Image: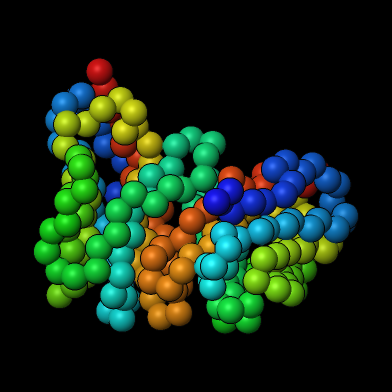
Length: 110
Length: 112
């Protein structure tokens, strides 16, 4: 079992719809969770962080965390073509160590 | 702040040559990470430092890879000798405690 599992996609959504991305992790010690966006040929960019169970909203993005289920998700509301990218889930273990999932490629169609 | 600065941005070398990648982290960040990204294996953590001290190098593929952080503002990743399978994009990232990592633009390495 991989430490961090994500559906590789592509997740194809029409413009204006909600994109829902899921991530499961195996390390129960993880307390902090991060979502990164990576455009093709670019470096990962931190877009969301979540530290406690429940929802956290930031603009069009909502992160959801359920530590009991070892599950974290990212919702992108009102998806735009500029949201087309790969989204990487990264739980943080002890010592600031981030382990990345393989990423979900999102394609927003106009 | 200029962000994490990596050099070179692109490196093409021949098998057997030594490669040195450089990183300047964001000032005040106490953690520094070296990652490698390929299509096949995704983003892999190679090594990370806290307060200039190597904490976990379990991701370093083999003895041909080494990393140093002589001070808080500079780190190097060295591959000697390089092999074609080392071709990848190498990212450096830095972070304050519990804040995730801020990535540099990466160094694209091609070993012929």
